[in-house]
Image (cartoon, rainbow, N blue to C red):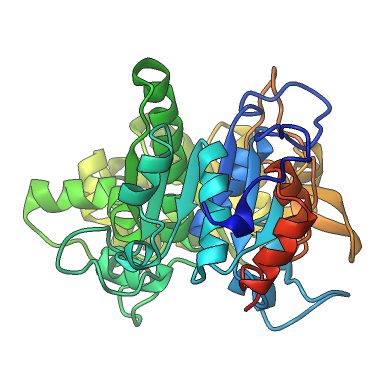
Length: 421
């Protein structure tokens, strides 16, 4: 430890894990997480830990901070994007230049108080900075260190840039997305990014449970590429089972039919009559007994093999009435069906309001701002909104005070470039 970061002896012994106050018990309230990631997968993972009570300290580069702060091309009142706001609640922010010795010394002190670290540098960068797992576990053997990257920490692709689009392309998702005669298409939402965040979260909690037995932390290696692969259960099963490479099917399903979007008189809607009971109910509902006698549609396998002809036959009848009519009628007899909503409709309906899909949070610059609600509900320890997404470096002095860094040491750190871009 350098003189710049020695704990001021005139200060009382610090509580190295002092936490922001919380109103009710939360199961992760005793954990401290260092989030040194940017953009989506890492920050989303950290936010979910914060929602369950963890003290998440977002360590950001001075000057610019997490690049998502300036993303999306539009602003409200302040400089932070809504994308950043929706992925960084329940965190505190400290700015540290980890390329300087002074910045790293403060960071090492934080590591000594931490349970979890989340990073998404390109593999090899953390070693050059002196913040890799091999280095940090000597400071804190109990540290659970989660690395998120495009293709993992090892292998011939490990040095490739990690982006959701690239993972969707190279992980096979784009090859099966879109209409059969259309150009390559990605999933409309970043499934590799968010999927990787969830897999990393599952690994972090598993490692924490393991640490309760062993007392030791471990290194987690999560990648967007493997997250994309993991979602392809049906498609890879088909490939291994038939030897045929899966192709694009639009909204259809490769395991059953009819199970897709179909055309009504005014719009498309989705429906699924994917077993024999539902198939009979559908034919009865639309008054098409002839389809029950058609040998092309006699079994699930037959309907799947003749899916294009099946949909053509169904749409002859379905196109005579509006989508809303068919959705209501199908739901009435137990056939899964639903309209195709845009986000304005998905967010503004009685069910979304009942489930608190949108919550209003207080922000120090924006005032009241909308945020996506908690995606799962826990009866005994429900997640809490405790802190707004932090302004860049808003908690730097507070966190340093918790480490026992006094006024003189703070000035030396500043002179040493710890907080400078």
